Length: 378
Image (cartoon, rainbow, N blue to C red; front, side):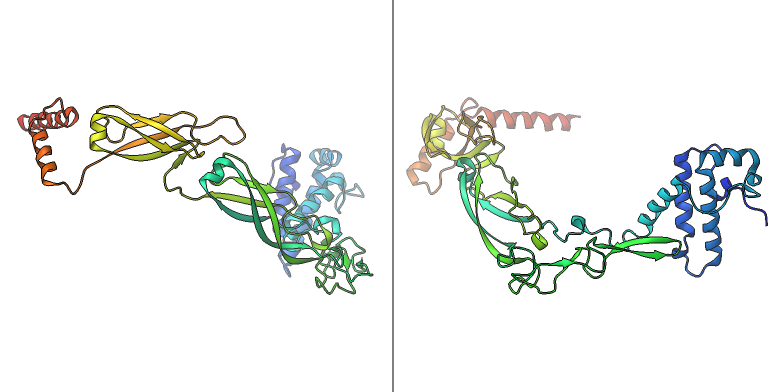
């Protein structure tokens, strides 16, 4: 039976480059691999055909001979078929990773010595706005795993040591024949650690680490914001079998303040003032977050919502010498529970008021009247 054209087998053009050839080969080999088509004789034949085509075309000299003479170039001992060539071996190694890498669990971490890095931990810490302003040292308790002291993290009973795994020779991986190829997988005896323990430590049951609550001191710098993350190196979980510990990540959240609202480095505070003080003017004193006091002057005719800026009384900027500002927003309070005399005085005041006394309201209603009057006229 005549052989199919090698380019046709791989589904590429005769002018394709090496990279395109390799991609086509990987795709075709994975599609027809016997382990993906158990019991399918036709798939096995196609798989061999794909291998033969790539083994020829991936070799520059063989490809040149094939382009000139076709299959006749390899007849009578001309060096065709079979499996070989550096490019072929490299590509089949890649294909094995695709086919069996996830199924076999991959290679053991830590180079087969069983000493895996511990997991990172997260700790949520709520602080006050004053803490974020001034900074402080916070004491926290973190439940975690630490290295077992009796066995010094080895997992073996004191006085004994782990021994090299006899199944994998300490590599953490074993090789098995899979069809045409040898596949490397995690050692089933030591689970990829490369070591086994005959006499496990009674304190940690061979894990090399135990659960404990760890007391730590955390430095909270000035100017931290909600969501700031602080990393404490090597304060996470202890690694398995004496492996390096992970890290501890502390996520900060800031409690709402009863008087101040924060926007970046600036602080905002709403302050109620009386109607008389807003009309006649005056002043008042506010406490700042740093513990001091600042006097705010209220000019005559102050309206509700007017802001007064106090420079340098906001929040410090993290890792900077800059400081934000404090904004005081006035809220004019309408008087309640008036006496009869107070009502009479306000009525007299209203009767004698003019557009000059209430320019904003007079202007607003005048503009509204003109606007809707023009709509009616239209």
